[in-house]
Image (cartoon, rainbow, N blue to C red; front, side, top):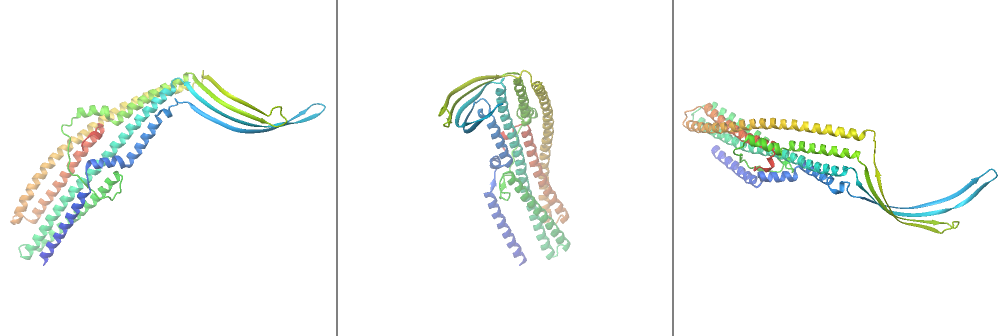
Length: 442
């Protein structure tokens, strides 16, 4: 009866696992799907895209100052004036009269020349738009690196879950054999108790992995910008880039690393600042034109019933600060100092890049070595466990020896999974530093 119940329980568990597996396959999230969703829905990327749009708007001709200013004014004014005169002999009072004035005008103002300040300000705005693009790309690269670290964490824990489940099933079978052997008098109850303890420990480890896996899935969903409890499974296959060369990576990083690109951009912006401030030495020439209409309505005391004034007006004006107290000179000097600071910052950024690349390369090479070693270690432990399993069936090894072989195999699997994804994450860090993360097949 007990044997029948055990078989029924195993069948139920198998059905549940198969149903869960089928459901998981329906929610398989491929790497490219994860990238597409992150690029569209990730919160940090959305904000970065909005910043790019603002910078692009600031770099348009409408914000450049090259276009004229056209304005119109209209108004109505009422006045009622009286005149009081006083001399040595008498005071006289004249009631005067009231006037109602209507006016309207259309005017245009345009700066013809301002020492090329507008031109360089416009170029700087375009430079800032490029800087915003670079900053957005940096955010995208950082978001994708976070995404894949989270993605591979789910993949690693998914494989750990399988390994822990397999170990749990082995322990359950061992417990079943121990119970059979005890019933037939082939071993002691101590063997049964030890097997039960191992089943409990493996069950705890299995549940702990499931909990960690669920947490990692929520982390991944957050980076994808969707409901954190959205069910998903991931692709556990990992593809590594072949023949990755440090010298080639350094060359690409000098040309494509976002920190270097930003440093170069800031240097050019500082050069424009010098030219913009130099414009303060030059005169400003402007053009103004207007067309106005004015009508005055007088009361009966006036000699005229009304008066109309209509016509165009145009002029050219020039202003030149021959001396502004040294403000322009100070601004130019400060701009030159800022340019020197940006060049120093670029050199520092370049040295930091070399340091980060060499550190990342060292981590990557170590990770590849560990991966190869763990792969060999896994194969050795697998063969050792299979041999121990056969000997256990023949009663040639103790339960402690069998358990140790089982634990060694489990640890080897977990270590291999860790090395497998650690090597890929190390590779992704190199790609990010070198500016090639967005052009990589994941």
